[in-house]
Image 1 (tube, one colour):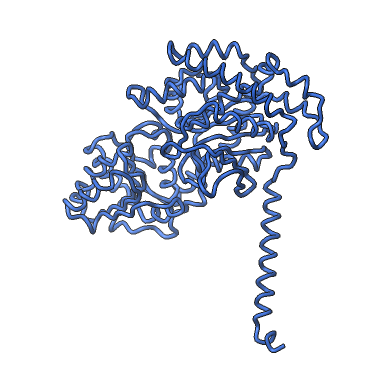
Image 2: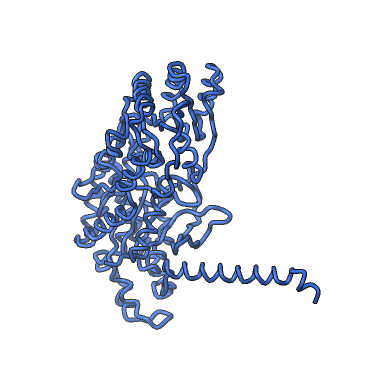
Length: 494
């Protein structure tokens, strides 16, 4: 079945990160499977405002709302509604797919999606009788625009605590947003349990679909790396949550135990100063190399320089960095937290408890495995390549879409009753937001009727993009040949 999918998130390109890459690659694979996919994110002033296109035919709407912090927008439920309404209608969206718990856009899009359903329109859809038989500007009936059921899906990429101030506030916002969602996708079973508890979800509506990588981008070196010296690689954001304090404590001990072991650390963050102080205090400038901030396209070139990849995270929902390192041929040492135990087979990874002594023990065992030749980088690459593919992720996501398409939509009164159950105070607040949202939507239908919307009648497809790109390259090649001919000495004589 063909779907028109709207993926909504605050975090998207040109920023680079795990969530951004996940959305982009999943959208491209769904495009290639015949679906229509549109992205909605915030603007990046001054260049990324309005509509932009990404190869191979991915349309991106950059909504001009201000960013609060860390590329996340301030929750503004009513301000976002006029934008999302126009996009959903003009693109004929059937599925709204939000990403990331900290994305205000994703939560608000899921809340607004029910306004386009037949149950709401049957109660308050006074515009249906007026516009159902009218013609739009191209002479086509707009009746089919008002009879689409919008389904909602949410993908959670992170783990959050249940007992701190940040977690409590975030979890309450998430619970209200996902109160009536049709399906929730998590990247690991641990993340699924965490999200169900945080948002008080029905477990029957939650699915587990792990992320994936493009294995061709993380090929191991063609020739085996030397085992003298052994290089331990760390590529991570240098922050407390990534367990950099464990790295600071364990690295000098490993350097003392093994004179032939060096560290190669890539990344930036607030804990960089701790690493610099540790390196200076133990005089390890020749043993520990700090690369600073690393671009995503440079990660593979760093990973292939190492024999062992070390991850000291204190919390991790999945750990895409572990997959990339294993695919590049590294043996993995990681703390046993979150969804990390679900990522790789036991013979490809050595686990440690999140404490200094156990990290040293795990690294000691990993060094012994590498030096005795028990780890084959090429074999590790082939195993990861067969286990995680984006085609499989897209296929499983399609099945989720099919499941929710067959469900009965939730009526407005049921939504209001479920909203009150969010909490004695939060439930009332969100019920007021829901009622005002409905009234504002009806006002928008009066002020900007659907017959005045410019509907998208033709969409770019990957084949069209490839054709245009090929023609553009041929044109540039011909122009280069003409320039070379006009500048040749023989040509200049005449």
